[in-house]
Length: 366
Image 1 (tube, rainbow, N blue to C red):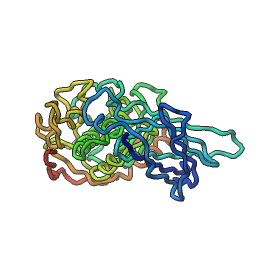
Image 2 (cartoon, rainbow, N blue to C red; image 1 turned 90 degrees about the vertical axis):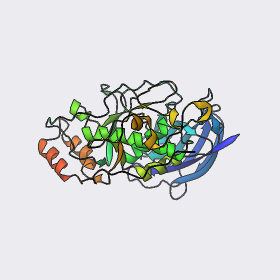
Image 3 (tube, rainbow, N blue to C red; image 1 turned 45 degrees about the horizontal axis):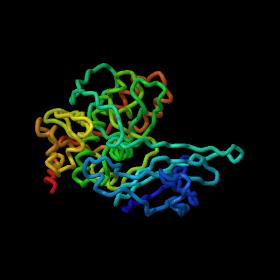
Image 4 (cartoon, rainbow, N blue to C red; image 1 turned 120 degrees about the vertical axis):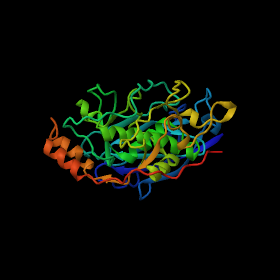
């Protein structure tokens, strides 16, 4: 039997302060009545280095009929807070999973309440709709709507938890780096080589920044940045755990994206899983990890198929936009649309990014 590690961080949603003494109970997918771990958070609101059983590492390194991760249910409770249940936390062999939990304060006179997060299958294991093809470079028209003059790294993205036309779906305001970490943890395996993770993260960031730069959904009359539908965008999952190996890569390269020579906007880097769906003209996720049996080569970012067929280079953006941080606030004040004077002011106030530049090339993986 092999093992992975789980770290849990618990804070108050009200003030983001650590919750000391939060009770943690963990059960397995196959035996929900059997507790495998029970302990409390420390003064930092953390419970670290929980060792949990997982499937063999090789299940995630090449396509097999065996699920490459184990699933656990985590119960978190603390006096004065709603109880949280996370059903479907993923554990991979040799990997450190990170479960961040925000507890909602409750009135002591109110009855006990609970918040439930049901984590669906990983996109490489479950059945999800394939991406609908789009052009990788968008034509940006001057329509008087919000169109960015430069590429910016937003502090937040507004994530619509469903297809674009689903008006019942909830919108979430998510910090940019947290969004990228969540998507990468949902769409690739954390056990893959670091260069493979970098290639995938770079693709996710370029796609996301294209949506931000073009104001793709806002120009269609929607009030969000991106959706969670794999037919249109990436899979983001509310309440899911992330992985340390992915988190570290995002922290290192979060401001990088792909663009073409003489084109300012990031490429809409589309891809498929390369296993259940084939996409010869796009990137294939599984084709960036497997080398056995002649399936395909492992590839560093500069060797991705999209870059081979159409020469491209890296662009580097070093700015954080303080203005985008206030979009949720302005949207709440003006539900029918943000006045033009604020839109113009916001575009003029954005910090500038540096010009495009070529980054050091990663060598081919062994």
